[in-house]
Structures are given as C-alpha cells and as structure tokens.
Amino acid sequence: MDEMRLLQQLGGETGLPTIERLEPARTRLTTAMTTLASVPVTTSALPAPPRSRQPGWRLVLSGVAAASVAASLAAVLILAPDRLGGSTPAARADAAQVLRNAAAAALELPDVNPRPHQFVYSRSQEGPEIRESWQSVDGVRDGLLIETATDGRTEIILPGCRNGRSAVTRGDQVVPGETERCVPTPAYRADMPTDAAAMRAFLTKNRSGEPGDANAAGKDLLYYLSEGYLRPRSRAALYEAAAATPGLRAVEHAKDGAGRSGIGITWSSTGGPGQIVLVFHPETYAFLGVGGSAGSSAVLALAIVDRVGQTL
Image 1 (cartoon, rainbow, N blue to C red):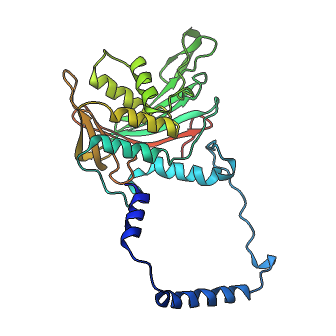
Image 2 (image 1 turned 30 degrees about the vertical axis):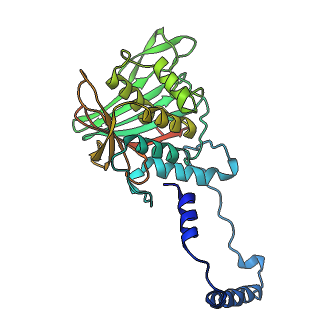
C-alpha cells in the first residue's frame, strides 16, 4: 500500500479544524510546556548510561552508530517473521504483487556487509528435523552442518577451499593428510546484482537444470532465500526478478515446513517432482519457507556470525 498517497487522499477529503476546536488542545500544550520548563534538570537526576554489550555474533552494519538497533531489528525480522504485525493487508490473488511487496519489505532490512572470515548461519526445519549450517563467507574456512532428527544428531564438516585444495572428510572427521582439488564456494557473493534486470540475467547465466526448467529455477531461488545471504537491495532485486516469471499464482493459506500459515507463490511445472510453493508472511511479506507436494521446509534463522557453532 502507498501510505503517502493514502494520507494525501485522506487529507483532501478531511476539512481543517476550526480555531475554536483547536483552542482547548493549545491551552493544554502551553500549560504542559510551562510546567516542564520550570523543573530544574541536574546531572545527578539522570540515570547512568547503560554499559554497552556487544552480541557474540556481532553483525557488521553499514552505519556504525546504528549497529545495535539495526542488528536487533535484523534478528527479529529474520528469526520471527510470523510474530511481526503490520497494517498492510494481505494480497489475495496477485502473486506478482506479493513478490513486489516482499521486495519493498526487504529494502527496510538492515544492510549487513559480511566480512570474509565470518560465516552465514542458517537454521531450518523440515518436519521434525532441524538443520543448522555454518558456511564460510569467502568459502575458504571449514564450515559445519548439523542435522537433528528423532533418531539422533549428525554432524558433517563442510571443508573450506584453500589454495585450490580442501580436506577430505568422513562425516565429522577430517582424514589426516588427504586433500582434494576444489574451487571456493562462498556463502556470500558481493557481486550479486541489485536491480531486477541484472538479477534475471544473473539467474539465467547461473541456473541449474535445462533452460525453461521451472522446478530447477525454483530451487535456485530457494537457495538464495534459505541459505545464501543476500543484502537488502539484492534480496529485493531477486523478488522483483521472480515477479516477472510468467504463470505465477497465489495460494492462500499455504503452510511452510514448521506449520506457519502465509500466502504462497507457485508456478506451473511439467515433469517435476511436485509443486513448489514459496510461503510469505501475509502482513510483513517476510519469507517463511516452502510448502507444496514437492516437500516443505521453514527458515527459522539466517544471520552472519563470527565462528562455527555460534547461534542467535
């Protein structure tokens, strides 16, 4: 919704109050200001400023002065999108508009610029299974994948690629003295496009599957939304690029892998394993996860941390 246009419309339809109607409020305001001005302000009356507390995972923000506030906001937006309220009504039938709303919401997120030595931390849910991963921002450092299910917990090392070689692993163990050739796969790409046209070209160039494979394109999109970290302008560009996909349709009352309800976006597909539905919060337009017959999952957390093992 365009709030400024709505305010202009309301302003044009509502007459200005008369001086007689404003006079009581003016009197109360003047009295309050006079009372406040007569109260002396002393340094001892003011509480001591709280001692700064740095979070263990320390998000790096573009505005240093706003770091603590923006980091807290980022955690809320990403960790608990289903708890956020909002006055924006849910889109009902226009799938492209849902994605455009998600793009606008993404631009309001704090702009976190990861450092090379950090990790992209993600936590997701698929049925009863919880999946946590720590992927190297620059692809050089060893990461970790932990899967916790009803039958136990599994840890898998994600070897970093250094000087064209990576360690050989077996589960959670590194095989001593053995390496193999590799190419770094950064969990964050600083060169991601920041406008829709460039993002469409990027997705076409880096697609998986055959040209025109809708399910492959959907899975590519899911990777960037669920595990790959995107800065706000790139995330918005991704939504805008997806909004131009032919054949999109909205699915009301869709559910993600954690059972959270939202508006779903899906598309026509032939020869795929089943329907993929992207689920968005109906008011905040935060990406919740995936539903549909092809499988379901839920994004519970996505953030930048300093080391493997750190969570929010």
